[in-house]
Structure formats: C-alpha cells, structure tokens
Image 1 (cartoon, rainbow, N blue to C red):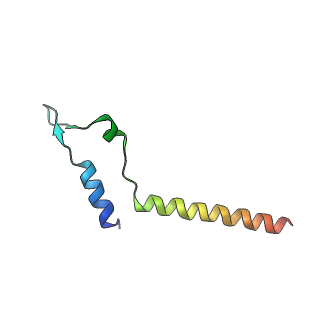
Image 2: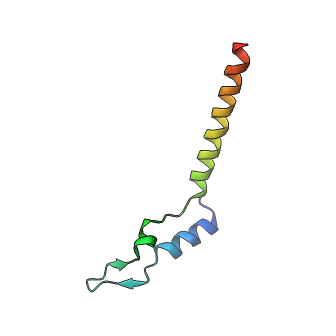
Image 3: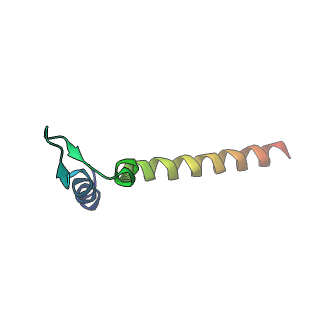
Length: 64
C-alpha cells in the first residue's frame, strides 16, 4: 500500500493544468520529465544498498 503523501503528490503531478484542443493534457517540458519518487522505490534501493554493504563486509571478513 502506498503512503498517503505519495498518493497526494502523484495526484497533484498527474492532474493536468491545461488541455490541448483534442483534450490531451498539456504540461511544460520540465514537468513532463519529472517523476514522483515512490516510497516503494526508496525502500528497495535502501534494502539493496544495505545488502551490498553486508555482502562486501562478509566477503572481506571471510577472506582474512
């Protein structure tokens, strides 16, 4: 389940400010290239980094 603040940020990002004549959302180039970082992504990156550090530590300790 995604946290409420992430959902609010994503909803605010996804809501278009303007529409083209055919109804498509129109965003500035900067806004179109930006993304909203999810709590899940941050968790996966943090756990992955911790596991890599742990594996390197174990490898170093077992080699000596």
